[in-house]
Picture (spheres, one colour):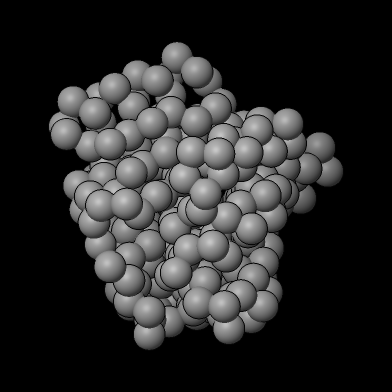
Length: 258
């Protein structure tokens, strides 16, 4: 895939943290980056900050749990660009306090807690991807990146010690007790494979990417990695060459097992 001018990338949840850094790094490669955010003030501020670095950044109001904003974003992108080259489904939330407080035990999760996480991490990604597929199909080399985690790896969940082997930064107490978050990422991984299988023949590469355990609001800034370090994997997945992989789970340490 050629880098540079005229390529258009949409990053959801891009007003802060890893999402904003992904937008920044893609913008530094010459792409027009669409800063997807549900809060207009924060989204506009992020776009202005990126613009101050010489990046062509534009705010797009997008709440992944609100179909009207998703559809409106797709219409706006269609009207201005006629296509979408890169989609990064970055928006995500934890549950039960996340890593910032003592995690809930798996048996303490209610359906409502799990549902709230799935609305963003799973259904939100499906809503946005579905709306953008017609635009992605118009790109000569589209890329879709779903932000996942080794904590959602079934291989790791079946062997708790395997998580730290996959990514040493995930040495967190109770990490495997995050039922809603972990299972939502496992579901997202399955969705990634399904999209990759259907779209691969059309030149649309779809991969899951793990940023690693990063200091962000999601975990109370307890992760050892910086957002700059975390963004490298999804940015690499967003800029794969045309003969690059699809339907893979990419991490800082290579390819992770599903």
